[in-house]
Image (cartoon, rainbow, N blue to C red):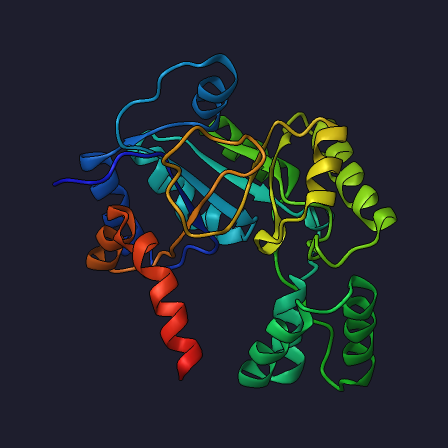
Length: 276
């Protein structure tokens, strides 16, 4: 099977379809070389060559299903991965804020509002969340978040625990003070737990030059986008592209995404959608 050259970084979120995820991993193991984030670091900073058709597996947010469903499969195949965690949620029952919106407003309206809220200034986002909590007659939403112990268990299994900010705001919608606080608090928390605070994924992939400069100032070594591209040229350590997929992605679509055709056709698909 032929694929264009380049480093592929895959971005997952939840993993509930365990058997389909296992099938994806079996396919990746057969046709690609799954690398660790430290292999990627060595390639960028020490000029160490990566294997042909290298793939890095990443998971955003720190959903409990990664521990429950993904980790056993990754251990089964003895392959590394990265999980970018929201440090404010560690050892809590706090929900992800986008899940709260869908909980209080209903799935359809909530999904629409999540995309809308992502366009707002961070102050407005927080004020909106406070209002819908206060106005709702529903009990507060609680979910199981990852604990220190579970994160340590994943780390011991070859999953690097890395930085996804403190509370997951949109980094193009925060003030300078909020930006510094989000990164500093996340770094301090991950340092205290002896994880990897200087590997970072932008929440929602929202990149700005201002936030990149703050990453440099605070010593972030690798930063990941969410732009659905394969890394084909020399990598910028703070603008590493990722391909989005999920545990339900069928094999034909997985192959399409990994082939590189997805990257070439995406601008055309977006243009057609705008015409509609």
